[in-house]
Amino acid sequence: MSEYTVSYTATAKKDLIGIFDFISDYNFAFALELRKTIEEKILLLTQSPFLGRPAANLKIAIEKSRITFCKLYIIFYSVDTSKNIIYIESVMHEAQENLEWIY
Image (cartoon, rainbow, N blue to C red; front, side, top):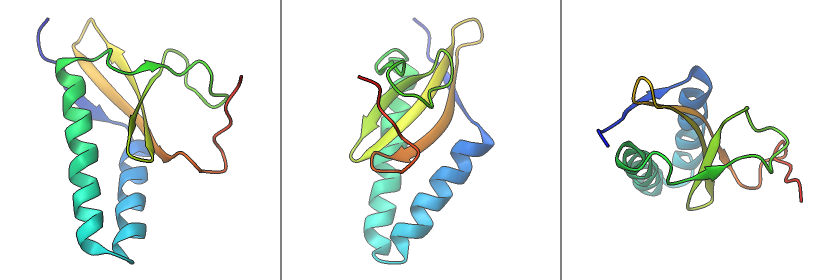
């Protein structure tokens, strides 16, 4: 399997900036470390794009999206196998109000 490239949606970019800005107000060093950790997790997807699981049990899931976890954050992404691209759709804290799990 060849390596995939990563593309961020506008929503994902906004999410990541918001996470960094919020945490850096309290602890800049931790915000930098968390950003690095999330980026490393996303880079893992370039080698193993199906590392995460389908997001079917989330009400807000985008059709065909997958999720993977990084600390207390959920990374929503989709895989385009025809173009070898991973689209990072959103990054949310697991306690965000608009996350609702379906069991």
